[in-house]
Length: 222
Image 1 (cartoon, rainbow, N blue to C red):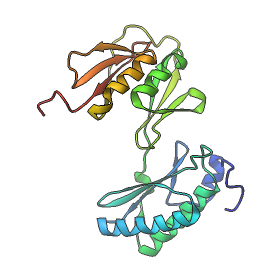
Image 2 (spheres, helix red, strand yellow; image 1 turned 135 degrees about the horizontal axis):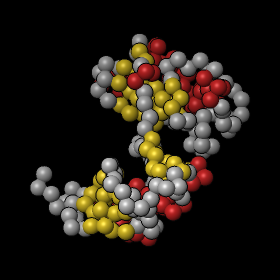
Image 3 (cartoon, one colour; image 1 turned 60 degrees about the vertical axis):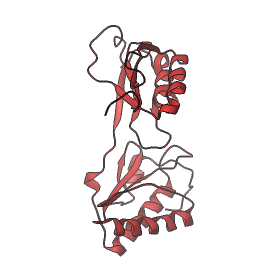
């Protein structure tokens, strides 16, 4: 594919590219290749690095003992482009040359939705607690490093006030940054619900009462 490298492609355009090893999940190309052992995975990763440097376009790559997991997206334009298609195709060719099988059915992406009457009321709090960036015109928050689950806001006019909370974020950070993260969350409209267990964790809440814990490894026996 040699068209405008800055044009964001539609889902049908990406699906029609014939990338059998890859799946589009939440606007990103995902692939897993079963290398079988660490040495084979390292060799595969090195070959990927070489073609990525040639293309001046780089995937996110996770190397583990049995597999290599890849994610491709054009961060500069916020979507999939011909650059991603071309690099994905080249990576698949390398895998075929090395006899490495793909496992596209094992790819996955996780997003978490928070029901809120108004995203603007709480968005900055969650961006501060998670150290995330705002995307999609304020409707979603994403990890700048691309490793943790995205958080997006589902419009729900009645979703506030006192109610039992069934699950929450535990955000574990290095001890040296927790005070900075706390200050940022409070400046963004959050409140400290409890600091009784600090420095193991602080319980925070956004303006709608949704809670999260900022945690460290300090103040714990194990």
